[in-house]
Image 1: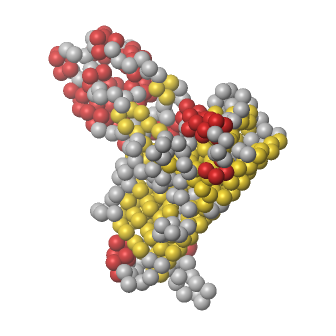
Image 2 (image 1 turned 90 degrees about the horizontal axis):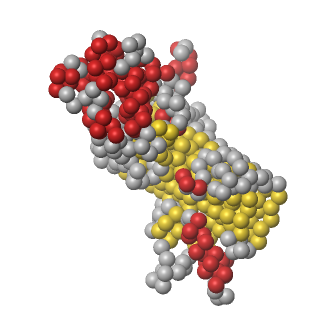
Image 3 (image 1 turned 120 degrees about the vertical axis):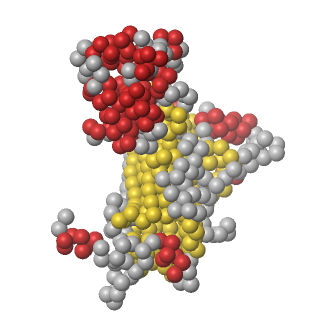
Length: 486
């Protein structure tokens, strides 16, 4: 990189009078750390921070910042990085603007809470790659106070909310070592390397995992062929016979093109089959390190389960525009409600309740907040939360948006992996693509007053969008539209 480029990306934004519009934070800046800047500027009600290129650590307790205006600007999501190893960061203001900054949340349950009347995030990267299954949303947006609303402008951001946990409580030593003391004595170096591999998470620590796999395979390569043949022949058959035979998908985010990651073929594999194949490869006269690396990675990965969590959550009374974002994770609407996410079962129950009672009008159940536009995003799915039923067991309120535009999005997951659900008064669902929705799958559920469906399509046109609406118009859809009231 040339010196001029480095100088350009290090220059903070200027205002209309040519003066610095933000306080620089980082090496060579006015303040060295974020905490120092927050502390020194505690009396300022309008705070603008320019994050210089580099990694800015945020450790310890949850950092809380409450001002009238908060602006955090950087020189790019891959250049100005805020690394959060605490439980998270909470910002509260009349206006919050975040632009060209990367957020790496390294704690398994860390989150970023943004509470304001106006929230803008543009050109940022938000990542949590070491999450757990029950972790809170990566980013939560809501109004500053209970009586207010929040206008959200979420443009051109990249997000990833990934979780992975060990699902089979077996060590690699149990599976890959013969239960013969003399044989284990020949494999001391291998055992030591295997124990180090055991300490990694194959999904959350991909690079470290790849390095450790390479070290284990190297220790196998150094063994004489007769030792490897004996090792293969003395495999613990009783343990292998009792290993799970259910197939495990290797999660897409683990399948990178980088050869250092020992990429596993994109297929389903059982722990039992992977272990058998590992022993077969070890026993070959001419060892193939590449194949052995792949099979060892398969064995370890099948001990884990992994998936995506909520990357972005909007609480009730949030509206605005979410556009041109790439999201490895879910977007959750009405997230602060105590209840369940809209599902096929819940939707059918509502439809039956409306059909069976002449006194119930779907429109009267709807409690509609601001409007929202969800356009041109790539996301796993969008889900809407429903409040718990009342004391009589019936649904008393359905919260949604005054108007909803869902257009030109790619929803990467459907049916068994979750269903996109949207609730609104006036609904427009146009040009959306459901690439994983197969025949018989429910791609989306839509509840509201009136809806328009144009040009939506799925992997198989036999997939469906289920709806409960008083009025509907549709045209040119390559996906079934199913009325839940019929």
